Image 1 (cartoon, helix red, strand yellow):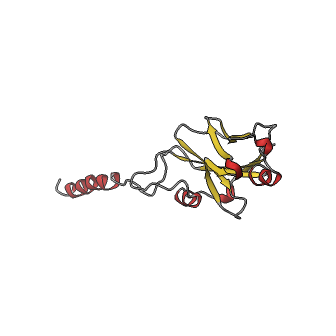
Image 2 (cartoon, one colour; image 1 turned 90 degrees about the horizontal axis):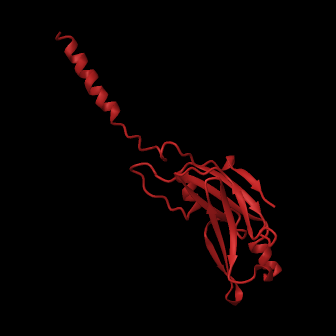
Length: 170
């Protein structure tokens, strides 16, 4: 009996050692995986200055939409975003989503058909957006990520930009 007591005690203690591992390296809620989609297209009067990205969104996902800045080679800016044009005009990029789609659209405090050709080419034609779905509840023990910084989001969630699927609309 005395020979079995140390072995039994060791087995009992090892049970507690392995059951207390909280795996703080895990980012996510266990059933939601981060994913990204690129969508490009032009906003026109014909499409109501909007387009839709078909993507399955779990109820535990956070939807982040970034617009590629055409003035910079690889800069992404979180939307909603307002641009202040001349004459007190404002152009907004916004996004709505449900469980099946993300809608990206523009709104303005003026008639968008009156934009100059340079404004149309800069703000409406051949626009590229990146839709990023990330888990809503980060792992315990990790700090919050600055979602307005695209590069911080990519690094925090270990997203692989080489595997992004691209959707072309209109």
